[in-house]
Structures are given as C-alpha cells and as structure tokens.
Length: 84
Image (tube, rainbow, N blue to C red; front, side, top):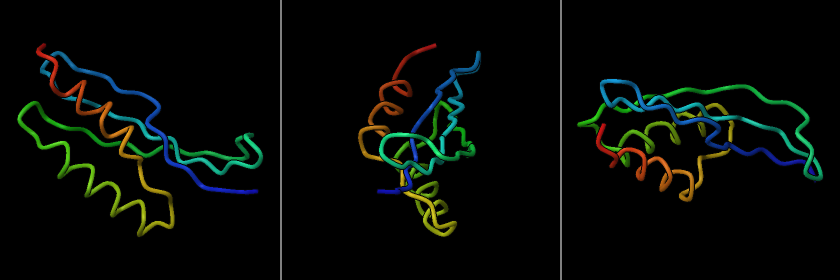
C-alpha cells in the first residue's frame, strides 16, 4: 500500500531560542520510502506552536501532502517549552 506521510525529521534550537523544524514529506510503500522532500518552518520563542502548526498543516493539505501528526506536534511543543 502506498501512502503519504509528513514526519518531523529534525528540530533545532538556535541560540536565540527559535525552533527550526524540518519535516520530511514522504511517499511510503510497505514501510519503504519511495521518495521524499523537505518542508521547513520556524517558531520564535514567543510564538504559538498550535497556530504555526495549523498553518503548516493547512499548507501541506493545499499541496496534497499529509498533515503532521499530533504526536509530532507534541514533540515540537516539548522543545518549545525548553529554556535556552
């Protein structure tokens, strides 16, 4: 079965506390990645993770891609709450 998935691949915290997030947009068949590309976003220390990720998910849907899972969004929230 072929499916599309969007997976948070990398979360980087800059010196200023900004999160830089890389999302893998993958086409997967039977657990094997057939193709992939990257989508990126960032969230400032004072930014709202839920609002930014809603924007990202809406954008991904408009591109015909899968949305980022709530589990991955929760990971982003955990990093966002860290104090640099």
